Each structure stands twice: as C-alpha cells, then as structure tokens.
Amino acid sequence: MKAKSQAGSPAPARRKGLTLAARADRHKLYEKSVQNAEAEIDFVDETFRELRGRRASWLREDFCGTANVCSEWVRRRRDNVAIGVDLDPEVLAWGRENHLAKLKPAARDRVRLVQDNVLTAKTRHVDVLLAMNFSYWIFKTREAMREYFRAVRGNLVRDGLFILDCYGGYDSFKVLKERRKVGTFTYTWEQASYNPLSGEMSCHIHFNFKDGSKLNKAFSYDWRLWTMPEIRELLAEAGFKRSIVYTQGWNEKTGEANGEFTAAETCDADAGWISYIVAER
Figure 1 (cartoon, rainbow, N blue to C red):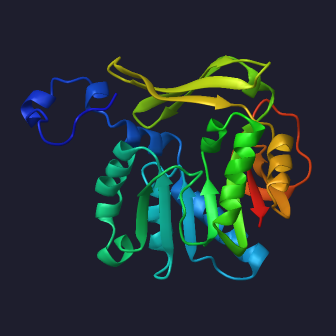
Figure 2 (cartoon, rainbow, N blue to C red):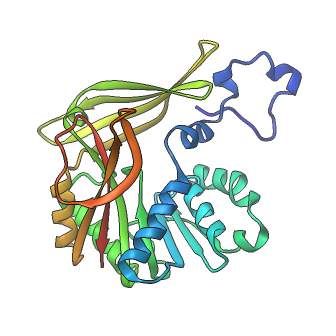
C-alpha cells in the first residue's frame, strides 16, 4: 500500500486530514528502518581493497530495489559505476525519481538500472556483485540457488567478489514479531509462518504511527530460510574458490550490535545474528 505522491494527489489542505499511514511512502520507511547504504558501501569498499589490493570501480546490485546502494556507490568516487538489476518496474521508477534524480548529472550518468531477471541478466563483468537484504532467498531449491550463484560468477571479473548477507540464530526458525521504534514510527518484522520440512517461510514488514494508523504488510516475502553452511556449500558447488564469513561485533555495555564486521570461522549460538558472506570468484 503506497500513498500517491504524483499526479492526482489531493491538494495540501485536503492531505492534512489524512492519517500518517495514508501520507507515508513505504519505500522511504523501509530505507529508514532497514537499509544503511553508507555502512554497506563502507564494508564493500574496505573488504574489496583488503582482499584484492585495489579499489573496486564497477558494482552490480541484484534485487536493487530503490537503487539506494547504487546511488551511494557512484557518490563515492568519480570513476565508480553502478548497475542495478530488479524485476519490479514500480520500484525502479521510484528509485529513478527519488535517488537518481537527486544525483549530480555526472554521477547519474554512471548508474544503469536494468529491469530483468537476475538469473538471465547479462551485464558488463563487474568487480563486485551484491545480493543484500536476504533477497536471494527467493530461490527455494538447491538447483535454483546454484544456478543463480553460477550466473553471478559469470558476471564477475577474474578477481571479482560476490557479497551477500545472511541471518540466522534459533529465533529465525520461530513464528514471531519484533518491534523497533524508528524516529516517529514503529517498525515491525513479522515471521508469519515457517515450515521446518521445506524450510519455506513467509515474512512481513508493518509500520505503525503515533496517530494509531498502520501500514500492514507494507512488504511481504515468500522465502526459504537458508542456513550458512548450505549457502557456503552451494557457492563452492557454483565454482567460487572460497567464501569468507564476516560476523557482526557486539557492544557489551549497550547490549546491541556495534555495526563492525570481522572475518570469523565460529560464532556464538545466539537467538539472532546477521553476517556478510564474501565469495571469491
């Protein structure tokens, strides 16, 4: 559900009577509560330079959504180029209007958004390819996931890196709701169902506002919950030489994640965790 913001929108005086939910833009809410494009690109930049001894210039983001990350990439350096691939024309149009349009013309010219299937999209070979926010979990079988990983490998330069994220922990297998205050609204992550026999799960994102209005199921996901060992095995089967897991650090004083990721081979059996996986072509 998305409040209209283009032609045909109510006049400002009439909009004052609308609820906060009716006036909200679900993509902006998502970016405020879920994405941190600056921190994500920091990790990509630093990790690529550490592992490859050079800077990455060409980046492709699969399931790119609003192209927030692509836009951040081209802001970093004048020679950075980004390719975003997504099947949804609505979200790509939103990204063009709300992110690309705000870039300087020279930077905007270095972003290419492609409406296509990530399994078949052929683009220039890139230094680094991203699949974030667990979007690749849309592939529910080993065969389909292996096919996707092979397609990724085929779109990388010889020393390219594939960077993706993963979450887990014993709470990830539960039906639950987690709420978090974000500025003037409340973000809710709902794991609505999980089938332990197939690994399939359905999840939703809801937004609640201080006037009592709600955006229920602003985003919904039909996924398979993949475990870290399964993902790393499939990366190897797809031909990647090595995969490295970067786990998130923890601030003991605040009891919260500190946003710093370091390479690790073990981690605690916590209720929930988020990690990056870096696969070397």
